[in-house]
Image 1 (cartoon, rainbow, N blue to C red):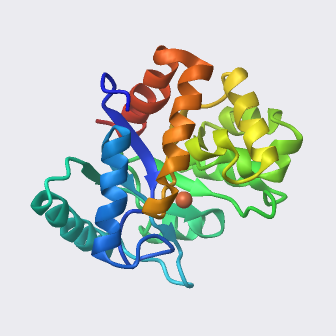
Image 2 (cartoon, helix red, strand yellow; image 1 turned 135 degrees about the vertical axis):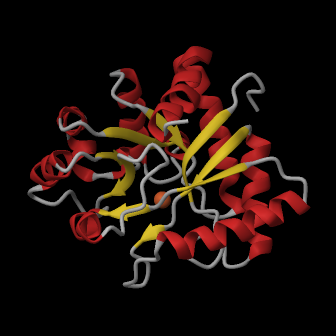
Image 3 (cartoon, rainbow, N blue to C red; image 1 turned 30 degrees about the horizontal axis):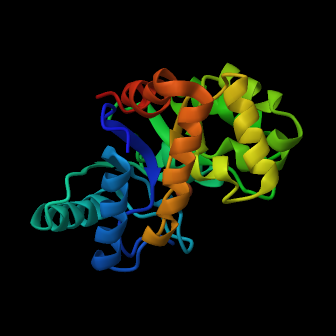
Length: 239
Ligand SMILES: [Fe+2]
């Protein structure tokens, strides 16, 4: 744990029963305890939208977050929960249109993911259209997309469209795949990463996040950890 750094997790699946994260509040509490143990002071809870063909509303998720916060308080877990969502690229324009997009508190930034099978052919056009509407996507786990693994320069073109880019801490220790591990490290070296996050779904995966944090510190030093886990996350959420 890096005690000097009040770290902010921009991406985790902590809320119970809303996606492939914890099924119930007991498991949710276990995820929160792990994040706090690792050293996070704040976690943005970012369930998949849609999940099972349905997009939860901000009100629905806010209610579950309130229950989770109550549970954390009762169990003396010191972790602030901020509402967000991990929007699939296919639904972003529709949600922008109907007001269903769930931004970070800053208002114009929101978490977004692409299919792991590959970036859509017109992904830059999509990013441009989002930018024109005054929003800034925060792209989740860029290291996991095949196009980025083939050419890390793809991340540069995303950033030119006004996006922030995230990597998963667990990728740094190869929790997802060798190519993801290799390119995550390469993107750090190229200084193309804006922030690192846990993307934690279950408490039993927390070891990879803790190990990833330790690798990150080796790779970028304390100042880099501060930038990737506190300063830029703070800018992204607007707190
Ligand atoms: Fe995620």
